Length: 458
Image (cartoon, rainbow, N blue to C red):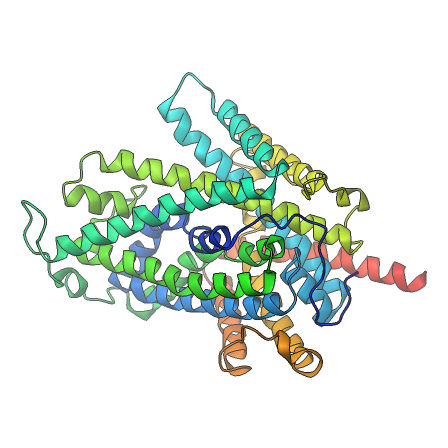
């Protein structure tokens, strides 16, 4: 178990990540298929007001990352918020946060491998889908079994491509609005107020949009996990959090503003990326194939990041005797290879379930992690409320990064999370995810409670 004192913990892992790796991981780790493809569902329910939905969800994510950044800069650890929760609330909280997040990552990892394989199978039909899944799993497992800088390099270039694609998209869209592109007329701002107005479905549409898009911001947490493997964790995580959150908010809100300005929100088609629709409208040749490549890279990037994050989380759990101690074996290069293999093994099982029963078991597993991110965020906020006072008493010099307007914004973030969970309960589409995720969380809490009782009896 980690010391409860708010001091940095020396990790036996390699410090092979550089600041540029961490910055790009924070910037690109959250830019994935949820933005490039899934944003269309948000536009369908909120119309042009999807911009407001993204602004609300992005602000919540930014507050959570600031809290997490404060704790991680003061107490860097490979288990990040799981370690913080244990120090703040007790072993049950660290156990629950760690295992829930690990389960979330390995299930999503399998989903990303499957989605990337579907794209690759369309390019090369002679290779079966399961064959592509196998290739991706083997390649990224190998990368994560070697030096951590290999993971960092993969993520650096993946993130650079995604960020470059978004910058180019924002530039083309802005030029289209003002009619600067060849053979185009100025679009102006008519689509923002036309077609039913800016709020075609009222504020209820904005709320529904938040439910659709809030989970697209999951993945930022891996930055604080990776910070433990840099030469100066406290400084690295502070810089990464500062540079990432505002830029990510800019990319998400900016891209949505371009989409609903260039095209009427009613022109969005189910199953078609709104990014492809905009690129087609401004005359970019092969827009669909270009965006397909970007989505493919985004999926592989997320797969790589989730494999890394899940392996470090279960390694941290093993350090605190919350997972099998055999997972603590570290290679000469400082890589927790057994933890990597344990995480990818579950990923393989999940993929096999998806290939065998795509409409049954795997769908239930995805539902079971649907709202887990909000549970984890809530634990982060509660932990920050408890630990901030302790750090101020025992190690005030460790507060290199501070949460804004503490404690009021922390409480506001908790209230917003509670509101999202309540709204999910009354939303027909989101309710199954909430109930399944609550069941998964209840199971983990039950195991944690049994472990606590056994420990007290001993």
